[in-house]
Image 1 (cartoon, rainbow, N blue to C red):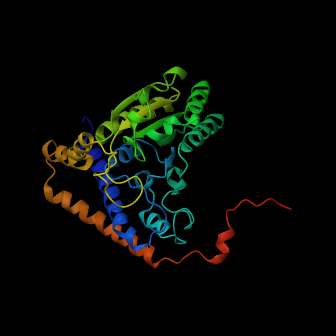
Image 2: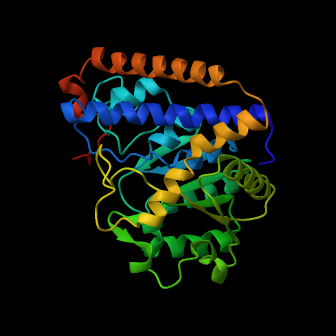
Length: 325
């Protein structure tokens, strides 16, 4: 880890913020106060934290249905996120989107989508617009390993390369597409090389190492911003909770025990705590202080959601497309 102390602290706080918020979501979910499906990224926080910290506020990111991490790391309001989960009028999507459709355009999160691979062409179109309008903006497409099987992934890589667009394809490889192992879906599992045929360079990094994610993404953003064209980055991480829902399913047959134990041993938050403690002499009580402050923020966000009003009936027909008669 070559990243400076201040950046490492920022990464640590971002990851803890995601972890504690999602643990609270998992705790609340069985009460049915949250009606939308939830896809937790617990265990994968380093990817969201590192990627978003390496981007500028004006850079655009398109997230997946597992979007709590990128929403918070990009700067989205935690209060508005919980309000959205509660389907309240004060939610970031007005209570209409739920967990899978978070958005915060004011900080560059242009939206999360429940449709697998749909983020990819959106980011490419955004990058094309930036190039045509001569805006010095980078677009980032977030997607999981399951999305690389979709045709639009390859079409988008080809188009981005052809037009030399300022877009970064970020594959968050958490080993499973729902309950399907990578080895059951692909003969060639080096996803970062899938762009080679189109001339899109790719690299693979440890997605549980927040510093490695940040450093690699920072380099990619700088290169793309200077006109270097698109690139593909694969971050190998691990999903510790079930595909959808608030529980752990470690005993299910699709889980690979060796990978599970490796992920638990290399938890991104504990890893970074170790570096900050040993290399930068951060005292234990400071970690406790940061965690306490974030827990208070989560508590306030939940209270905000609980007390917020439901959308009024007239809001039902707003933001809908209607053909004029």
